[in-house]
Image 1 (cartoon, rainbow, N blue to C red):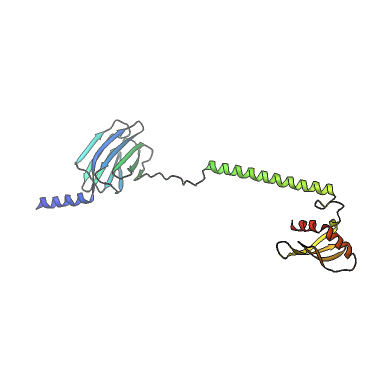
Image 2: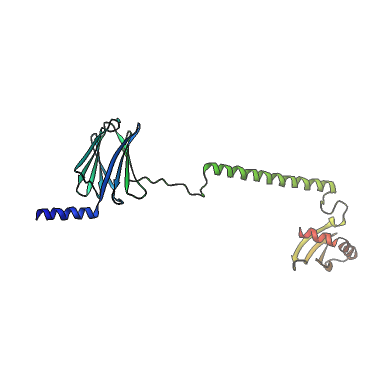
Length: 254
């Protein structure tokens, strides 16, 4: 009966635990690696305890087919590596003469585990190491610097063009006597726009002041005088409107 209960207990543990298939130690000048392979993917966790110069890693839900496995090391990092079976757990004991840092990482299919041991002033255990790559569209410091430099160059070019246009306007105004569009002696230089209102895409009503008088005109496809608000000089204004109406309309559109 006791044998039957022991067999049922072993079968229950085997159904829920992953078993270690192989264990190998690789020694390097600055670290050593303990490589474990499992018969099924393992998704358990690792607990850690430390007593003096001995560090014990407990692999949850992992069975070890042997009672104990022991291997000495001459790396100077650890003195020995031991694996012990603890029911549904496996203990990895590291005898280290000096403080060590421990990193653990699983294989992609989770059927293997690498435990790497370094010399370090303080010990740290990471169950899994998954490097997180930067997003593809994320700007690196170099990309940010290049973008800022290009933006600065564009702003300098635009500022130079604006300054050039401003100096060109001033030069033309100075050359023409103040009105850079119509010229110094153009009669339309005496016209001031009081207000305007567009009627459609081509026509607008404009209130103008000419020689101390105000006139309401229609500008566009046809240039017409609609009304005036003081007596006198109407003929002179209508003559000017017929002569310079098209040019005045272009000026208002600008």
